[in-house]
Image (cartoon, rainbow over all chains, first blue to last red; front, side):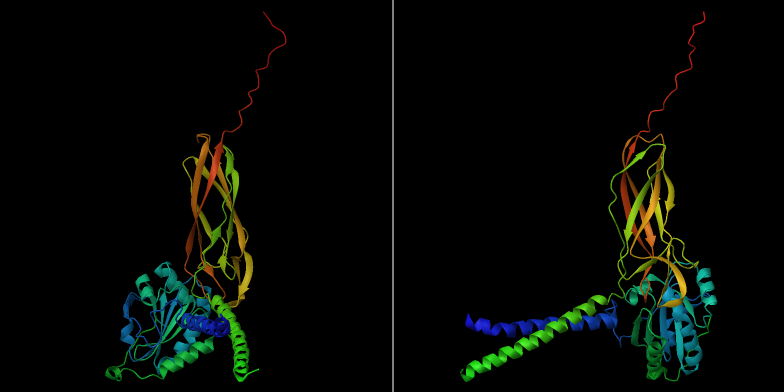
Length: 195
Length: 193
């Protein structure tokens, strides 16, 4: 009995430590991955083919060798409207260094409405008509905006759920630009025509 | 006090301090964890509607009380942009019970960190939508269930969530209209033969 009393503080410490550790790990996992738990940084970005606003077929893996900012957005999403001018700036500033911004519209609006919205926002990068299956590949995209920064060799370097600061996104883009393209495609050039 | 007892005392004191520190850490981690709701779409709730008694041939107003979880907002019925999705109630009423007017509350003009210069028309917290039901004379008196859905699209301060629908239903007891008073035909006080 006496021993159990003496041990009790230690038992409590261990229990508290385990609980704290679980919360800590859980929090950081949730923060880093959102609910896109199967996609972690350094995962290969799931490939997809979608139709762009100009009716062309667009495949993500065709961009290997470039750093990619893949942005899921919707016309009804207020925070998305804040980011889009930043992305226009990034495309202007870093396009020549190998950045390609790609927008994926995840809403039910008509193609014409999406095109009008993109035009009003001065978008200078491809806008693709999203599909739920593609959203699912990226963890369901439960909240918008949601962006993925992808390295030149096609790996996810950062996941940005919700609105974050422009500088923070820019830092992430710079890191992606500093990555090495896959050796087999190091010399390949990929050209993507803006909308 | 023996050396062994002293060791136990020291160990106990150290354990207590460590326990306090860890408890604080657990509490902090838990609060941070609970605050991390980004990526989780909110779900609106609707309060149960008490049985509504509606007289035939008249419009009876029904109040539907909705609650938006703290930290979120939804567009009002009249958002300020054609691209924003308005909150809208759609009802599917039984035959011969006509949907009357739907009264949406005015939106609250608010700006958010993601758009500090732009005022949006939103609902947050609790809000009420009024709805008119108008049973026609052909409706057999009795209880009827009204079904509908509220469509809304929610955001928080940093993200928006896909549009959702919330089913709503309430019961209406339709009663007969009061019997019409038929005026007796005017009669002459005098009988003329």
